[in-house]
Length: 427
Ligand code: HAM
View 1 (tube, rainbow, N blue to C red):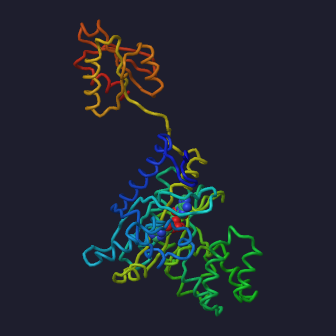
View 2: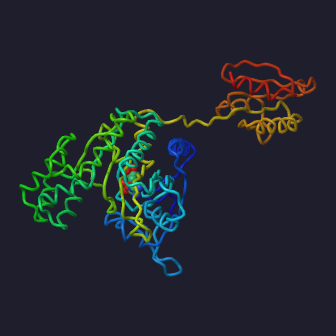
View 3: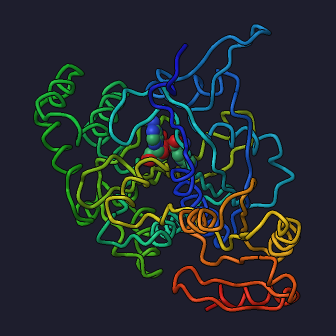
């Protein structure tokens, strides 16, 4: 019998789950702040949803199989095709622009490496129905604000920004064939992770002349916006420069830098493309997205312009850990209700339920236990307060309320016990 989780799949023990909840809470809070509504779709989809439009790389990583009804199906490796299908199905009835977000668990049979697992959760935020750069700037601002909400600054991460139309103009200008354009996409997407000689070799094999390779690589690796001023690139750059201007106006200019090697691995992007990286260059991409104006049409709906991104929980969690920004994962109990004798149990149960009704997290010993053991357990569970119920106090209509942090104690009327605990917790 296999006793461990599959390679690349995670068990979420409570401490791990606390971190996941923390990340999801920031995702939901910020997406909601931008007016985005949450949606979801099925985790299992028809295989052709991905083979049609996602691109070779992701199709090679699918968890696909034939189901018992003879259908070719796949676990979802990304959310965007599901979103496009859902929007295409109701395109006419939905008020535009559509602002939707989702937090799906996704599955890709990846080679094991730091920051890449075979399942991950991904915040997807997509803005549908607006073709202009205002929508691109809005979703990029959302991604930046998610990072800020988690305590990260412009010193920790950057948005690397480009536009596929610029690369296309550059390649057209250099008279590259469609096959060569496809090789350029692959080479640039992997440039940072590939030895230079290997990239050059791939281009040579595709028949790209060395002089063209030098010229395009030179421009692609430029770390400033200036090259976009070239007359041959002016039309293709206008939208990207407007996105940058809008982000500057929003006060987010520090978070953004040009990177013309960003093309994105997925096949459907048509315009603005971006990825978020840690500034120390230690981790894989935290987030990736861009404009994809033809996908909804290709999946069967009317042409609808879309822009959005996916942000994974794996790399983000590593970055938060590296920067000391993870929440405490200790169990946090508000109150432990302890008893001196078994005769006190009925009163303890009644009080525990009153406290829970008041919204507090409460535990008590489920079986008879010595008082000092109960108090030790209360400490171990991180309880801030213990209420001790004993025969003498009961006879007087009282309970003892202990502050487990300051080791002080006071007697409270049994009828005021909930108020006394709330007052202690508010201190
Ligand atoms: P993607 O670049 O494939 O884009 O994934 C987005 C992010 O998900 C990555 O930057 C990374 O943080 C995380 N991620 C991807 N694969 C893995 C993995 N195997 N293990 C851990 N994390 C991973 C998309 O999926 C697009 N559909 C995003 C999008 C939405 N574009 C427009 N709207």
